[in-house]
Image (cartoon, rainbow, N blue to C red; front, side, top):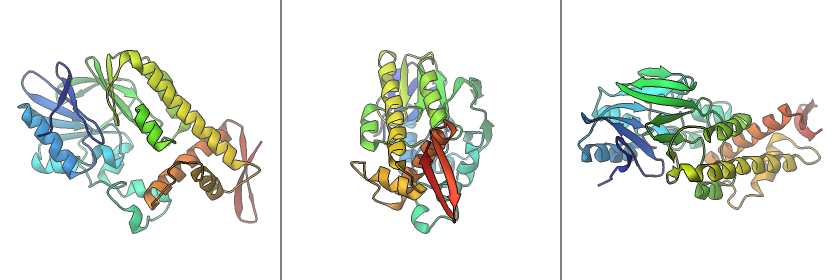
Length: 301
């Protein structure tokens, strides 16, 4: 039987490939923060909640990556009265999961990209919330929201009491080591989130992937994440070399990895991240682009 790990009174989480947060009150009502990637994750979350004699009344999703909202469909089917909350812009992907592989591929994605890793089952969205820092009332619970853009377009970190459910604002060291280049949508936004997260007023931080991080360890974890992002930028800059097309940059970066992409999903996730770093370098004035004879190329300034 899956069990909730209690972090503070009324605040816990279910450990898994993606951590799902749970907050509850004295009456036994509970709100989930993210739901995992699929039906099994949703089932495990529901069992863990009910195992503590709690009643799930709402789901608050932090962003629209399939591994964070894939359990919604199962939960809503079991309890149609559940209210689902999602961030502005991100909510469109929950309702229309096709948008995720479409955005990675840039056109109608081949069937190989229309898979559970990139497309969860559609989820209803009853409430759309802004990710700007501030308070948010969800089904009677007073929560705090912190803007955590970068990894996703409009990601939120969610605070309850002394606990912060940080989603993918940062990753644990073992996750950074495994993936080498963290997925990002906006490099400047990711670095800004990492800089601001140290000031979030909590005692324990639950990332989307990896074990909770106590306050005293947070600065080192955030710096490790910032280093990983900066190393990724340097890899991309080095891959441009004396000039290269976008696909050449992706290929050169891939060859530096211990585990290069082995399937279309991981390839296009890497490609999207490389493009984010190219845009970051362009806007920083380190790169320029040219279009000649139908060939688009990057070059160092």
